[in-house]
Length: 274
Image (cartoon, rainbow, N blue to C red):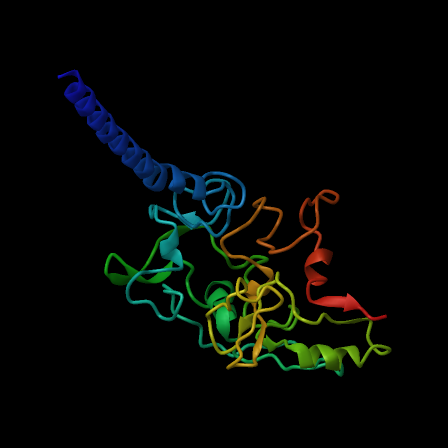
């Protein structure tokens, strides 16, 4: 009799443990993990001052929605997207003033820019209202906003001549050609192109998978991989909002603007000639 009771007690204990472990797993996956990933810590979209969080719940910024509390909807939608990656904005059809061709420039920027750069410009060229989205609760609309991107330092307009080249090719042959110019230039291209920054295929908004090739992103079926806005800037991550400008790579604190020394970022693609 006692044996049966002990056996039943053991089975009951196992059942309780299974229930406990499954409950714990549920809590970790559906409650704790989202809080960790989307916490108020530095660098997340929910961090105070992150300017790419345009929701009405954001603090520390002057440009935000009047009442819309969703964060992702300003850029992404699961339905009726214009292009990958589920982009919730129409793309500008403007013709831009691009940086002038120089004697040592090996590639000519595409006009209009392609890849992820055209996604960035759908906000930052100022030609499309910031709150205009393709799909909000099933219809196209313009979300009411407080503040304005334009005029402002991040409203570029259609004149990109004073900005770094975007939508340009970057590959091993160009690095070799650039190194051959040492003597007339100070900095050559690094070879192979490293990560970061994230190099992307031109004529595509898909980022290449640097996990498969950490020495440089490339598509063997498309030799045209190169530099876009997102090569230097991560739209989702700003370590210290208000100072770091979404840089993918930067130096440590230096002077009154911590984490905003551009040298380390520049040296990911450029290096001094011998």
